[in-house]
Length: 316
Image (cartoon, rainbow, N blue to C red; front, top):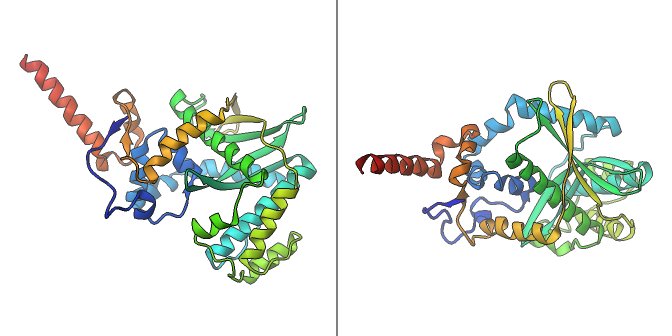
């Protein structure tokens, strides 16, 4: 990767502080392996980033995921009024999801979260199921516009995403979540009363909670005693977006030491230990698919350096 010269951290603030972030999405971190500057530009230019989320291809992919989820259970809308409400619903989704996994052997759209390198990460696992051998398997669904498998560079982001999901899930079911993290990192209020819609939803799924503290204690207690195993296998399933035809399934080789080393590097940007970096010159082909090209300093500098190199050769 090629480092940028301009200092992005403002007034001694690290990127988490500068962008007013309490947590990162797992997809943000995994996309750093594709192009770190693209992720940074997404936070710097939210109006441009929105065009990506509104892209028909992205929306079509989301529809495929929703259809898969509806095969297993209904999607219930819960009215929330605060961040504490939002997280309480997330906790309830984890508990009902793990119960579903235990009873039926399969769950889809399961939230996972936890702290790594001082950064709180949040994501959603597409699917967990038990194999015929009784192994707990994570399966991530990726839709493809073309009827072909992705490039190695694209698969790398998918493999990293799946690996982070396993890391977070395993730590959750091992009881490694701590209540202080939610208060300190996410700045959530333990004594906050939950909205009536959240309390009603909790009662409907078999729980009684009145405050955020109730919901958090319920989550931590159940994670400790539900005896859910770690994930054994990681797989990426590729399907054609328009037809739903299967394109292939790739197994992901997981190494926790290797993953932690990569996360140490990737997250060091967010904690202000280094500057963001662009792709290597040989990977500059990625810029052809980037909506931030006209805003990218690395791209402009790369073009300028290439032009200068050509000019120097002509002068020889």
